[in-house]
Length: 114
Image (tube, rainbow, N blue to C red; front, side, top):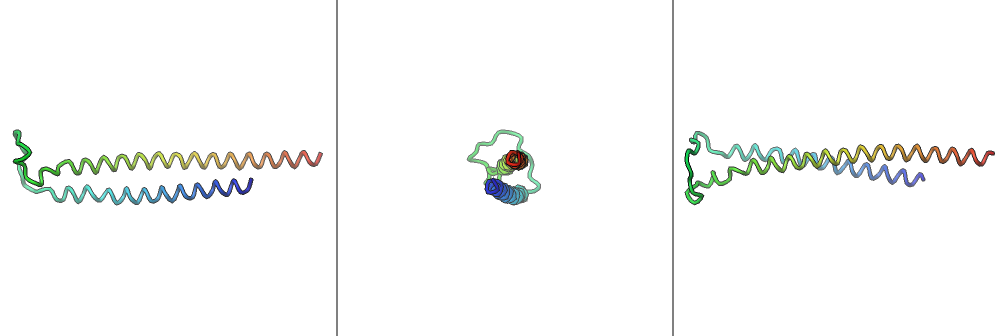
């Protein structure tokens, strides 16, 4: 049983390491929208009427890039929250397993004494 408990603790440590790696990736991805917005031209008037795509300038064709990066950040954050909740639940299962192991050991020891 002790081997099972050690194996479960190792899994929790691996999950925590993976969670930390995802947080670092999300933090790095957070810097990308700032760089994309910094490339937008300053002082241009907003568009008032329809302009065909072939007449658009190169910088205007990438206007959706910040939204795409923001969507990726939202998805990564949702994934991190989900993994964090799994990690917490795994910790509770580990505690319950330890308590059950102790109870079984106590019952086994009490049965041998009688």
